Image (cartoon, rainbow, N blue to C red; front, side, top):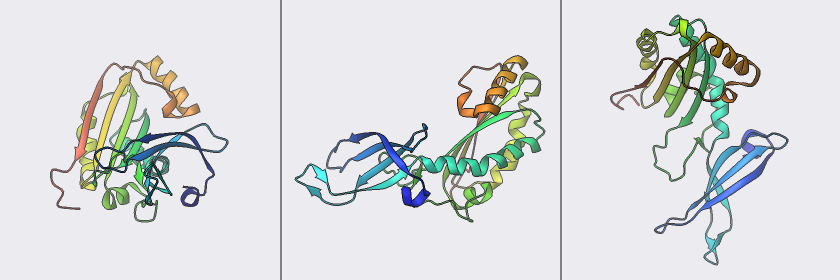
Length: 215
């Protein structure tokens, strides 16, 4: 982790998932960058043979959540531009993205250790073309901005870009005063800090390919 991201991580918490039916088991580790509060989940598996049938000589990272933030920052602006393109003028948004666990690795979370942000996948188009990802994109608008017509327009723009990917999108409206309060927190602290709240209207939809032949 330190070598890959050039950051000084420290362990905040760890939980060992015990061996079941002959499986080696794995360990969930919560880490944070020294001096910061936000924590990220890391999944590690045994890397060498057991010692005394109880412990392992070393472990290796299988996947981590820290990469989710790096990828999110790369694609959020582009997703917001899609929303502007369909005519939405006032909105706030949050994005979460992770790699799809195509290999069915137990405990897998975030992105695999082999994934790097490179020229081939550092844009939305590149990410959808070269990787298998699951993107969650949440949009909040004032009531005056809400329209169910946005769903069709957004799908028309994004669907041609995907193959073995899934994009989950929600659009939720709030009364003007409530929206302004949430917008203020969003601008000052980020989307993760505004908290959950049931709005006036909401639409949820998925964008995914019917077949996997293109990837």
